[in-house]
Image (cartoon, rainbow, N blue to C red; front, top):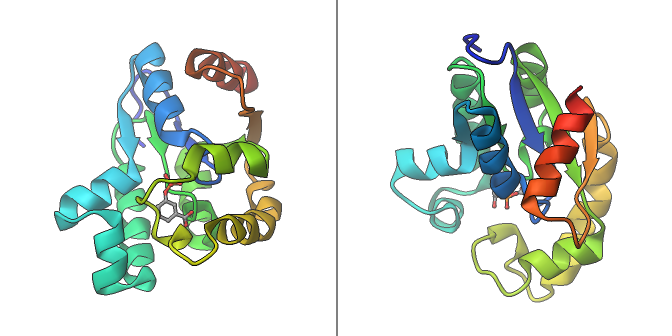
Length: 173
Ligand code: S3P
């Protein structure tokens, strides 16, 4: 990334419901650096929501766009980048992230994630007859990959966004 106040972009990764967007926005505000959000950029470029993109063009198309957007955002001024839950799973994304950034995984237990995502209709991968099982399957498949992040921060049930920002800054020290 282009050095500004930071020399690397702080890339937030982790499961849906871990708080990547909320924490990322607050962290960027605290540091007074740009806030970047890959899902938001994909939606803005397509002028469609993520469920619409999945329904119309399919997940492989979304993943391609996700890679392009992450690669582009990591060339902009260093800041905080929140990614979608699947982004860190692709090796090519992990490669660009490790070149320009430091990856921070926000970790939460399955039951905490479920409380945060249930009842919402914004996540196509949870649109199934049994959304809890879909989340659980993704969780168990992904946890070992998220473990490769440079830093891990616990995002448990009670913690406030502000406290999460403190924890991320502590991990970065
Ligand atoms: C996805 C997570 C979503 C979004 C898309 C796919 C995933 O982002 O990118 O629905 O594969 O886990 P959030 O983690 O912000 O929900």
